Image 1: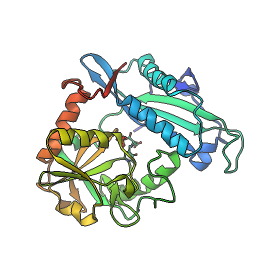
Image 2 (image 1 turned 90 degrees about the horizontal axis):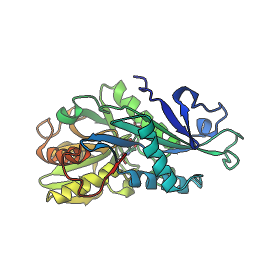
Image 3 (image 1 turned 120 degrees about the vertical axis):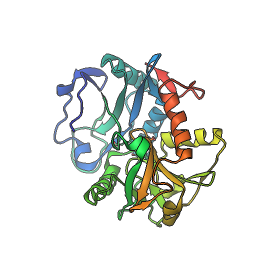
Image 4 (image 1 turned 30 degrees about the horizontal axis):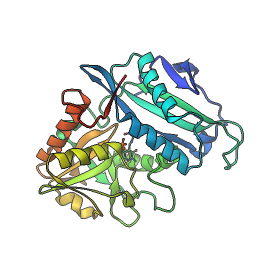
Amino acid sequence: MSIPRSEKIWFNGEFVPWDDAQVHVTAHALHYGSSAFEGIRCYSTPQGPAIFRLDAHVDRLYKSCKIYRTEIPYSPDELRQAIIDTVRVNQHQSCYIRPLVFRGAATLGLKPYDCPVEVVIITFEWGRYLGPEALEQGVDVCVSSWARMAPNTYPASAKIGGHYTNSQLIVMEALANGYTEGIALDVHGYVSEGPGENIFLVEKQVVRTPSLASSILGGITRGCAMTLARDLGYEVREELIPREALYIADEVFFTGTAAEITPIRSIDRIPIGTGYRGPVTERIQSEFMGITSGQVVDRYGWLTPV
Ligand code: PPE
């Protein structure tokens, strides 16, 4: 499905028509994956459109760039405002927001420093990431034969374009074998995450998720799910999780900006729990959706009105 185009894209400080947001084929990022990005959702609420966890996403973008010695030529305040303005200009009620920082065209060769740091903000309507029924029915996934990156290879907590070649291998393998999504293990064989989602297990009343040491992206939705789970009275643990724990968990779910909170109903064709969204997943998901839809009080200050 092609991207539903919006009218304008924010491109290095100016709004340009969708079709005019072009780069040259020698752009450094195209050859070497030298880009950092974010995925943010803006939700429709009774008080109007509201951006979810804007500060946390902008903060992570700067950190991804810092790790890769890339200086963004705008302040975080300017970027936050530009994101709000882009949603407003395109008159979205709800949308997905993709800020992207990339090394543009100037020189080729690995040394990136002579290539300009360019920034774009793209917005578009994006529905259910893993299919329309996924949030209730759950998805069928597999454990991938591809592992996440070893810790001293690519820094997993930086959200960098080039890192997503690994994610693409996981997704393509899963689809080729008839699954909706894959789960990657880390280099030691412990559970890491999905190609674009973090993962949680529920066993009895304990909610477990791999720690940052298992080559995961420190997901913002993951943080929300941990907060909501604790508030609902569950014990939450970040820990090493062996692969087999997936099959015998009562419930397993993915979290992510695009995936939101998506139950997993089977892994490698083994049904998880009842083979349907479990009660703990449902409670966390319902709190999450209550807040994002503006139906439940935003008690953590997660929403920024547009
Ligand atoms: N792990 C990975 C590897 C990842 O890409 C994401 C987000 C997450 C975890 C969850 O992070 P957060 O969104 O902060 O809760 N993946 C983004 C891109 C997905 C895509 O297909 O593109 C997203 O969900 O926006």
